[in-house]
Length: 474
Ligand code: UDX
Ligand code: ADP
Image (cartoon, rainbow, N blue to C red; front, side, top):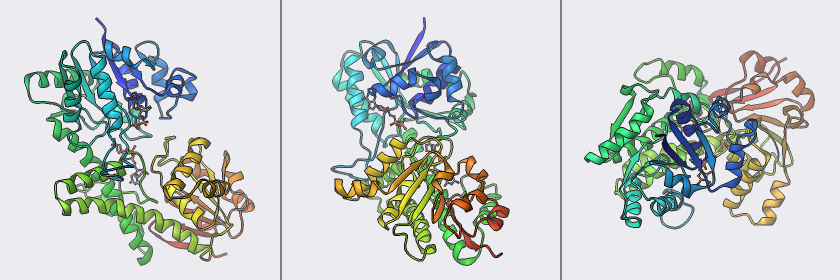
């Protein structure tokens, strides 16, 4: 008999994860469902226009779609026919009520749990895939059993550790897979069923099983540790700029210590993405809730340094332009929160654009993957959150131009600022840009990607992260 799995939520987590499970486990029929009709239509449509861009995803979807991987809006049917249901719905930070701006909004998780309870006629294993606060699995369990007393539900926490831009590789060759569940006989049986899916391609020693709470906390802790490394190196980048040290040299020297390791030590304009800020705020909120104020403050500092880094960089651009960017064009290169993704959630670009718009700048944007609609919506939402009314938002947005070409975006600009480390930015023809932009050519490199020779020979004024500024001398 074909084993049926479904996943509720066809987003950045659900889509790639299920594509890889279908690819590696041909004996399973995998159905990914979503309330969003457009998204499902896109998953079923042109292979070159999937709703999510991830290197390698297209090839896997091509091989599995309509064989053992299906995308559908019929959520109820998928729940009914599957014995294992993954939940990969969004878990944003609450923007209302108790815990506003910190706690996780579990509305979607709750809706989803109620729907599973309502539609289930046989026993199910429900897998919490979305990152959620500690204790969410308990709440899911409660919701399921209160709303359906006729079937037995087991709830498993199986957090995703994929990073966008390398999701497929992370899923195929993960450092570890975490499966947390109740330590009862039926809980252990459920753990073993989920483990057996991953055993199809992942070595047993990489599959870690824990209790529910440890699994949930480990996910938050992993993201907090990673973000903390970025904030640590970014905090030192400020010191480098003042003292004459070079952050890349410091990073290399520090990371060469095998106890520290060399990954996640790249100074940048600030981390973004849907997880880091949300997960740390969640940790901060939880610690406060338990009265652990010192612990809460410790982790909160990671976010504060990140905000400081973004503001610091934007303010350095303004300072280099004689303290005013009023009516000056500033070109932002990159809108995605990192390269190789079309996702812009919490991208530093949004905050930098907001800062510069507030200072009166005209903003040109170029990103190879993020859609114009998304850039527009990100800015409108940001301006709304600043408390601007519709007319004020309209007026600011009219000062933003989105281009599909770097060189068009560079025309008459006072500064080109690299905010995402897209590979194509390493090959920019700076001699050509120099003819299009205002002189002297000013580049603010928020990702430290421009080679030494280029910046010394072709760029008149160059600032970057964690290095003193360079003025070209002819
Ligand atoms: C992260 C975790 O890595 C992943 O395990 C988890 O499942 C989800 O959250 P993601 O946010 O997709 O993944 O990308 P990641 O590669 O972690 O980058 C996050 C941000 O940190 C990006 O803006 C990136 O540019 C920035 N970053 C990363 C740095 O600024 N410097 C670094 O050295 C590394
Ligand atoms: P993530 O990065 O966590 O995958 P996304 O926002 O990309 O987040 O994806 C989450 C998906 O979950 C969205 O496509 C959203 O429409 C879907 N979703 C949210 N709530 C429900 C629900 N109750 N039923 C089905 N799909 C849902």
